[in-house]
Image (cartoon, rainbow, N blue to C red; front, side):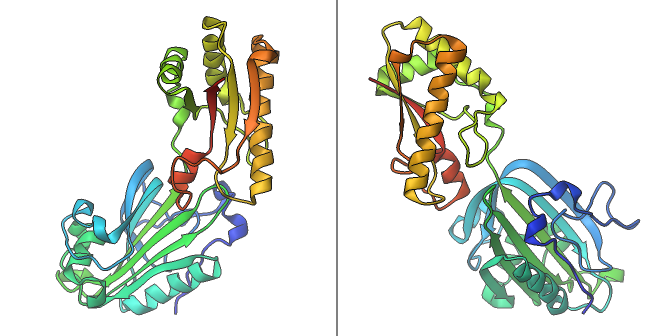
Length: 321
């Protein structure tokens, strides 16, 4: 086999220094994903990267084709940074050889295999249409292999969709060649501080429900240190308190379920206390109007089984006293 390499787990958190490979035959502006190199000698035919988007990861055989809207029963919905790369392998390289190289490298890096299939057991033509760009891969499904994988990380899980197929539908120099569709989905919350909930909106929510959930307060990982980008939200909380002098609130910290309960209870309490201190020390809100409390992961608003859900659960709430 021609070796293919993947950066070790120790390097996954420093993607900016990982090297990528390009060749003169690659599509202009394309490049390998920083964590996963190409099968040696392959060329990039198509490349797409989106900073934050949804993605339907195929985790079962496809029963229908024609786009993700018709394959919801076979997909796991994901959100995050999406990179899609289409490769063509060197001549005379089989789908099995290319696939096994990727599979072994992913296993060595700690990826868990969620779904494996080949040929008709994937769903045949339906799968081919659902998993890869039709303009390159369409109507090639007699020799296809697929792997969906997951790597758990504290800063956001990574999913991989790996598809190899032999080109039997077109002629010329590409006939009989192995194509690879490599999709990498890096789960992470979008830049939610682009829109900040203002004091008026906070007041309306408290009037209606007695509480308001805030996602514009950011902390260093596993710490209670408030990040500078939290400033706009803190300013709006201060405006709310200044506009309603009689209002008293409990600042409640919430976490996801990563880690033990005692740890998360303590962390959520510390974060709530940090918000109270910022409001009293930096914005002049009277301390007797604020109380800090932490509930860890005991009051989720979404499932903690996905990064999307965990991101929704990591929040600070203002609860009217």
